Length: 142
Image (cartoon, rainbow, N blue to C red; front, side, top):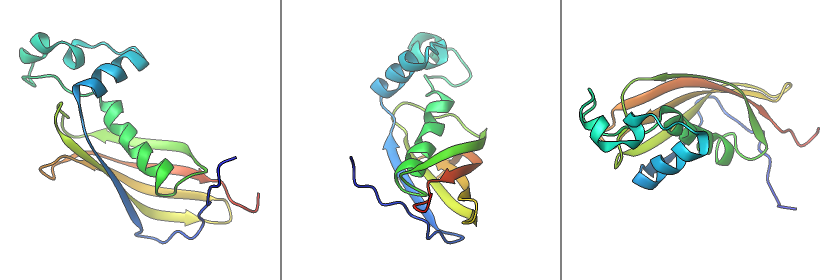
């Protein structure tokens, strides 16, 4: 069994982030995993003629980077989603470097429920995603 430290010492305003450069392989693999072969994501010729002028990454792939922060850093291992509100503000392109950032806005230790502001930014610091996540934290006393 993996030795995992369960955190319960959250503070309002506490932050964590995770960054990743989006690759051709990421987009193709994600399309295959979820079965979303929208040509805006997988067909360069089609996408070139669209309003975007090139292929865009799946919105839910970008949102998945938020999950990486939540599951690995804050609140971290042992936590699980209860809900996620999300708004997509701008497209993400292959080659963009995306930083997913979260910030604690509420912590209810008696219930083990934490609420975080969730945002993603590209390499130009342009906000591309905003939202709010609510998670259940696996408390060590349970």
